[in-house]
Image (cartoon, rainbow, N blue to C red):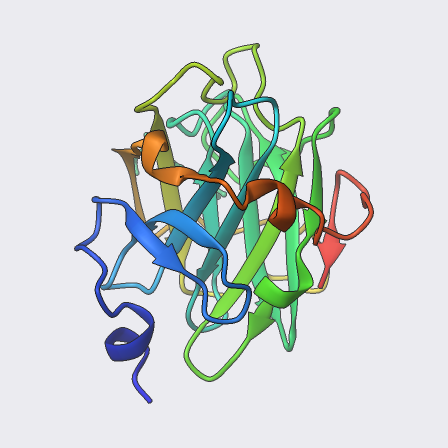
Length: 209
Ligand code: HEM
């Protein structure tokens, strides 16, 4: 089974997010996919007014890391990085004021995994989570009023040096960029149901699926 033919079936080319429904969780995300690398990041939001929370999926293929900037740029924005460790996913919030491996970031934001959307299979790995208090008002993320915010994406196909450690340094991305995402296409009436699937809040620092 080829990653591109099934998983990416029906999706638009890279840099243009399009709706994608995860086959296991059934959650629909407005999703950026980079076919060349296998990177993807998708967002789901409630139909009503956006609060501070969203559901997201991030993944890739192979053993490298995938990252998202919730504010578009790398510097001084809230970042999330994730990578597979055997059959589990390791993830953390990061932030940095200078170019280099970003330090772990702590705050009121938390990641709560959604188990049926978090897996490693023969074609790709994916980490689906409720991001609580992740939409901030301090300029580090997109805001609840943005309909077309810029997000940043970055990946390196090489595994981090300490892949069991969520605080591990990562090597500089081999591919990175920013893109606009239409949040009106991320909204779903099922959001509140999907939200109930998230595991109890875990540490803001790390989670092993
Ligand atoms: C050792 C680790 C890292 C280094 C040395 C690094 C360095 C850089 C540099 C120098 C740029 C400017 C473009 C370029 O010259 O290539 C950049 C852009 C970018 N980086 Fe990183 N980076 C690292 C890790 C990360 C991580 C973990 C993320 C996770 C989200 C990330 C996200 C981005 C994004 C989204 C951009 C494009 C937007 C922008 O230029 O601000 N980077 N990075």
